[in-house]
Image 1 (cartoon, one colour):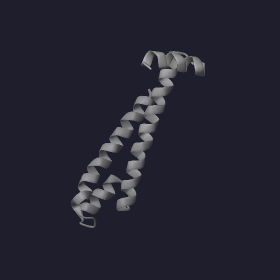
Image 2 (cartoon, rainbow, N blue to C red):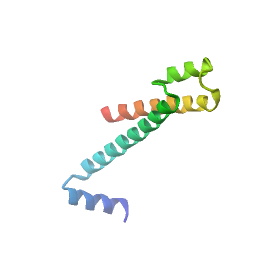
Image 3 (tube, one colour):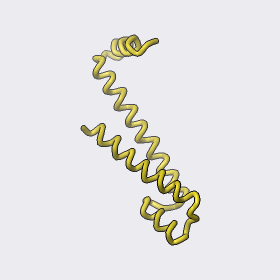
Image 4 (cartoon, rainbow, N blue to C red):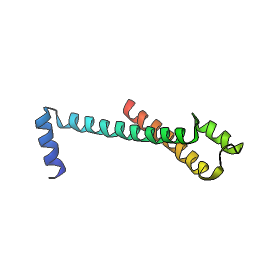
Length: 93
């Protein structure tokens, strides 16, 4: 089934206009992406028993936590936070 047919059929089935259907679908997708990124951040928090990237960085620098793979995870964490913030800004406008 192509996108146009699917959009038309879903729009009719859900009694939504096509633009509203697309908007709600995109909003749901962005919210899911935020949730998945937050889960990854939570995993890193738990792995290193820290609450923030600053705390992780401090632990690495002070050698409380081994640098490898913590530095890579620190980068992933900071990128996930930026990604989450960007997605949140998108859905707030």
